[in-house]
Image 1: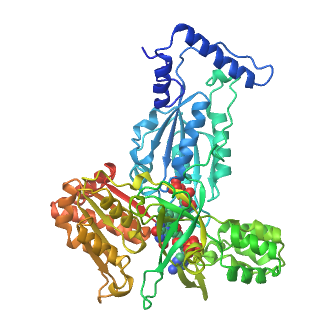
Image 2: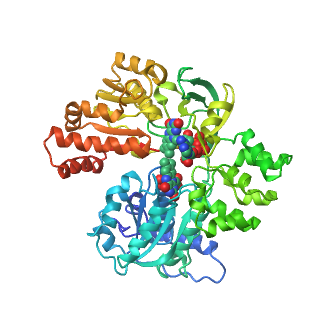
Image 3: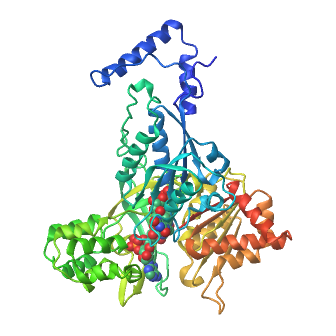
Length: 586
Ligand SMILES: Cc1cc2nc3c(=O)[nH]c(=O)nc-3n(C[C@H](O)[C@H](O)[C@H](O)COP(=O)(O)OP(=O)(O)OC[C@H]3O[C@@H](n4cnc5c(N)ncnc54)[C@H](O)[C@@H]3O)c2cc1C
Ligand SMILES: Cc1cc2nc3c(=O)[nH]c(=O)nc-3n(C[C@H](O)[C@H](O)[C@H](O)COP(=O)(O)O)c2cc1C
């Protein structure tokens, strides 16, 4: 018999472990353990706390935690919440919204959603189906379900935390009882998110759930720092290669960077990314300080270059600027509801230059948030490159409102990182964009820098002598100037680690040809590969490419299999549900 019931406030694997120890233990051993654990708790409890007799195997109270995540932040927070809930005597059920069956929500007693917003106010790709169902007419009533929502987003986007907000409204509209107020987190979510989790648990933990703790006391869990150095800590690497892969006649600059790690590369897998900790352009910071009337403050200059987001201009920035400085025109811009339109395509420097006023260092700190790292797909496999990791970074440059603009991290990488220099990075694992078993076929669609993770895939498959077929769709502007990693692909085709490659160079023909056109041309073979069980991967630009690729696949199913548009849509949806249609888009 297993003495620890499944209803105990532990994860299933923990219950199994406990049973392995407690199951075969003798009566004396169990009595010793019970006394020892009770003594351990008594010594750490505040004086005067009365310990209840050892709890009988009463079922732990349930809590359902749903996360809608794309790059893993919400998923990580959901796991943290589940851990803390267990410590408080609750029994959490953790659900990726990708796998959510709405009927499960009706059974929930306590419900927490942790949701990110992607695209321009859209749900994370994996959550689209369940999100649509939740918003749809067929969504079930949730009368009496106690809920709370934590929203993650980025104030730089007009639709800040839109998905968390909509889920919060929807749960209430379906009859749920909001017992924890929603908090909308910006990119520096760590503090507010852990505070929200603590508060939510206080409300959602019934007074007698954690009886072993006495007095229904909620255990504070510090998510800030892992106890020991982990694989996902920030590490320094040396730039061992820094090469522009575009020709000198291209109007693009896409840099291949090889990072060398002393003491071993983080244990990354194909499909993972690295967060790169960039610095701001000193020339931009100097201009900003000049407009702010703070030129010459070297300490502030160094701080702004290294650690503040000095480019983003959000509604929140404008509101803070107005509140801090009392600038009449900025206040009027807000009062007239024109600020949202005005900030489009502009940066902080435009605000300060257009509405100048004497600023203090504290004003500047208040209107800037911490500088967030930028993610870059890893373009190599450790099994081929050892203690290195390769990145492929396209320099973002454009002009708006008469000013030349440069993306912070991509230009730091392209213009200021040099061979022999050092950079700080952190591993960002992505288990949702991983290779299947080696005997499975893979289809990879990666135009532009979207091809980066597929270089890792192909290297991995070569290093592991995978037997499955692999097919790459790549596209960019010009064959002669923009064929990223051309030699690598030629070698891979020769040695068989890449079975097939189709390319689309959009500016080489009068009519623009993109990867989705190539998918359409090859639709018969494509559907045949998918029928044979191939996994389909899309990486790169989210706004147009990823949507067009999906729509093309739906049309391909309809055409090749003579399906109705609805049935073709279902065919792609079922690939998604089977986790054979995988995206990593940005
Ligand atoms: C999981 C993931 C993987 C990624 N992998 C890669 C990769 O392998 N390679 C790669 O190059 N990038 C990759 N990216 C994108 C990368 O993280 C950065 O977003 C990109 O490099 C821009 O960062 P930046 O700091 O240079 O620009 P920022 O300073 O962040 O500026 C970008 C912002 O500028 C504005 N902008 C950009 N272009 C225009 C325009 N034409 N008109 C008006 N406004 C504009 C937009 O508001 C945009 O959000 C990835 C992103 C994610 C989330
Ligand atoms: C391409 C892209 C689009 C985004 N769009 C939005 C948006 O429209 N609104 C918003 O508030 N946040 C937006 N974000 C920010 C994410 O919501 C934020 O990074 C969040 O922490 C991601 O959580 P996740 O890792 O769980 O997916 C976007 C981020 C990226 C990279």
